[in-house]
Image (cartoon, rainbow, N blue to C red; front, side):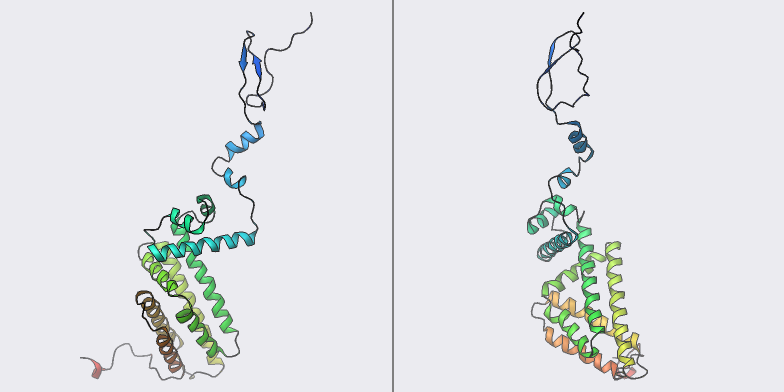
Length: 267
């Protein structure tokens, strides 16, 4: 007896690419579902949450990823400055950046992550600026150029976003920790510059470096706040003021040891 064609399809379920029909044990014809090949099906199921990234988006180089992060952060900064943190949605940032939600969530899974990204970007910029000043032939002149960059040349919007970050740090411990970390970095950078000037003989021998730096950082915070709140704020005057205090401190003309006003100045 000649063997008949098997009535049972030996292929695993879901492995047929084309259409067609097969037979059941009773010989009845059944329609075959048109499914992708098992390798593709497994890949799509396994990567259900991220297949649009793996398949639909080309792989970016490290440089391209860095540029994409910067582009998204700049868009977020514009949105936050215009509408505030809490009124800005991730969809708003997507529209501003001209990217899909997936294109943002790959880099920043939340608004808090975007705020942290802005802080880290500031940290890198500050570190680079202080490093350049420390290597200058004329450190005092370089400090003046650094102050001009942050207090005058940068757009007012940068001060506005800084003020919002400070406000957010009051309620978010993670953001507060990042802000305090930058404050310590700035303090350490200023101390290092003052120590360099002292070694070069450009300060009084008994300069209270930490006392001077405390005054300078407090004044700097005040300048940032004033620039953010007052669109008529005179940045040039503020720059001249803080540099006058800096030079006076280096020359020993500021008594930084007193913690209370002179008695005759009290009301």
